[in-house]
Image (cartoon, rainbow, N blue to C red):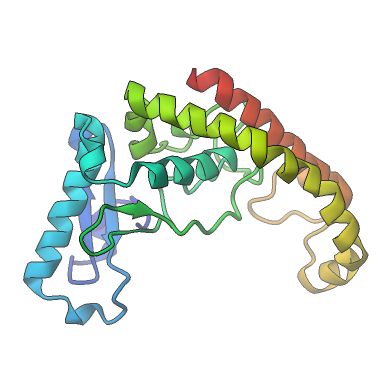
Length: 235
């Protein structure tokens, strides 16, 4: 999935991508790119039409409530927990991968492109750990509708709480150890990339100047606050 800007600026649809118009359902126009097989010219027009029909039906199914017929639900839950926990600006906006195994249901992933996440954003209103991402930057079409389904919402919360028991505490605790392992390289890294002490898009003003260690503490605190907000706001 690429950026949901007006498709008129993206050229003419071809066997590389198509426009998914979800405005009728309170969404946007999403250009969907067919990335694999890499030689997309090998896809026939008939195959391409089938892909378009299935993807559109899958997205609309989150509004109708029959999404289990189209998506691997455990994949949806894990994918959006990661996106939401990290407060990824690109959630349902760009840099989104999903795939459909032969004879199977759509699976979300792999996840990537988290440079504008975890509090590292200076150009979006209401970007705060106290809010959910489907209220920020146009939000997530899929997650917004999925959480309106009581069964999905219950499974989402159950998985989130499970992760809090077995994974998240270890993840939050690892920040200090990771810093201790990497901090001797911070000056060498800064000599190459010049990220510390200077303003770089999309770094917020309050991250300009602090030391590497202060930024590590900031990210950990930001994610912990957002996790707590997730539990409160989703209930």
